[in-house]
Image (tube, rainbow, N blue to C red; front, side, top):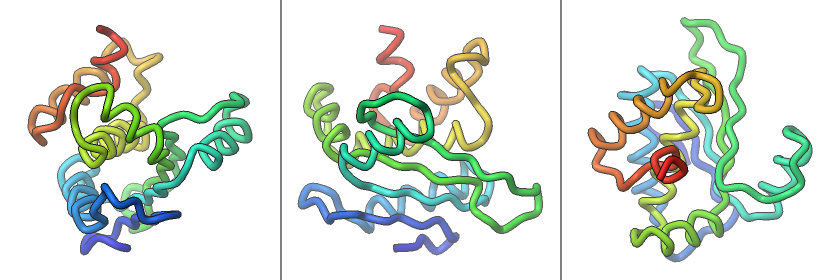
Length: 152
């Protein structure tokens, strides 16, 4: 599924508690507002895929909630700025833990991942990504972000 702006959303399996059009609409908003018109790709899949990707690309042999893979593109390129992989089971479990819907958790993970695609890194940037994530989360009406949770 593609957004009108060009980002792609791929569901490995269609979960009953996630509406593809709602996720595509949110991706279009992220593309337009956060990524300044640059498209990106999102794979919504299971823990096995996230574990494999995490192991193969980061050397960490466990599933995680979201992974970001920036692409090398020029400033004027229409190519995607990168790809995100999101674990639907992790999103569902985290949504239960924090008292919101799976769709809301996927939105939180998408925002976090897009900020990584834009070159931010909360582990090394002295709070720049945390401030950006909080600002965008509030503007987009999202629940508490990943970084805010980790800091609590």
